[in-house]
Length: 339
Image (cartoon, rainbow, N blue to C red):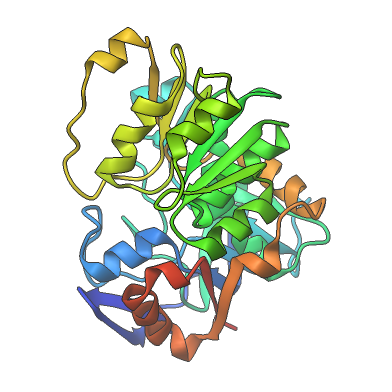
């Protein structure tokens, strides 16, 4: 079967790969739709330290069950539309032993540490599957990127009525905005692109701030009676926003970082102590996050049509990735139709 590969920095192509067979406890998925992730963009740009080439990308999956391997429970059936968690866990490392398999030391994510789903068929353990009545394959392929933001919201312990600042209104930031809004927080979304700020409002942001034109600190002070937001979620990955999160959050506040900064970050570390901050990373997502996002989509609370920038056929995957690399601000989400 054909597979789409990122073969090196700025290089893509198609090649044959063996069609898999479902083993014990596994399900064979016929892949219909796969979303391009920011990690795929970084792989294409040569900026993903966890990837070796060539690599089949793709871990945002909308698929149909094609076959069941031995020992798969009878509540799964061929023909069902599903998505899946693309992560693995070892069950032995310190993270797994604490019940936090999402940040397993030996995690192997589809399309990153191992080949992904941008091909005809993949096999996955049945325990990673999620069904979602009423959702189509495009929505199923949107579940995983939104879970990353929902997980950051959970890490931030967001409560109803709290002011939460989210830096960045790309696909991951939209997940954080939607997740915080689902908890009835007052969400402030900051970005430098008007179209993405409009999308943030549709996803649930109460306030939006163009951080190049507007005075973000002053807006936050006005909204919080001079205290600052209770939580800041950084979904940009820039040294400036990494620092701003610590500077803007309130005393005794929480800061959650989702992405990797693209360069070394220098801090005024006295703020860590003076404010007694909780500073946390957020990696991947849990099964609970998948279920929460699925419920959110089923309720029609996410602006799916606005968030999906382009859907392209399998043959145009390389061109779409190159276009995204050339103009990142123009894209929220690109999906590839495999079938």
